[in-house]
Image 1 (tube, rainbow, N blue to C red):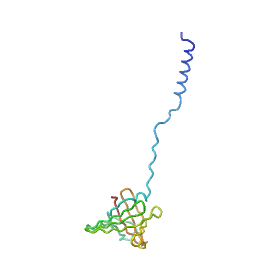
Image 2 (image 1 turned 90 degrees about the horizontal axis):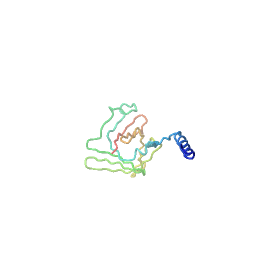
Image 3 (image 1 turned 180 degrees about the horizontal axis):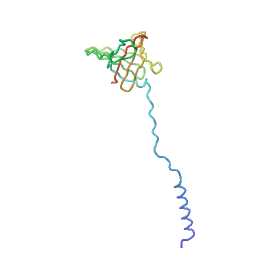
Image 4 (image 1 turned 60 degrees about the horizontal axis):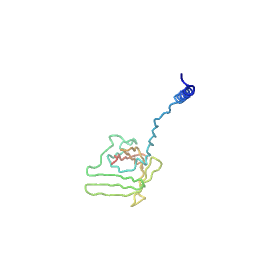
Length: 155
């Protein structure tokens, strides 16, 4: 026969196990923190090499495949955008490298203003048609009836 104190201890232990086993199991898997989408400014940082140019020959204000043309075979052209708002354009033609330093500013999240150090009044305003980790398309919309584009790949 089981003694009364042992029986009470056994009953208390069984009750405790019943209470703890009936509790809701917590989800122990961690919820991953979503990666924030980079802004156009963050994506723009880096060095970009010209892959194509395009002129709006048919004046439809759209960059058509037929309007794309590559840089001259003797030419290499790159833009560099630094996070501190400085940058440089490098143009290599055959063996000569011409460097133009500039300051750049974002107007909202879609426009880039380049101010050359040698003459800030000779500024250029581009609209960002596309920017990703690998591709950049800048549109020069100085004339509202005619566009030109520069298509880059990231270096």
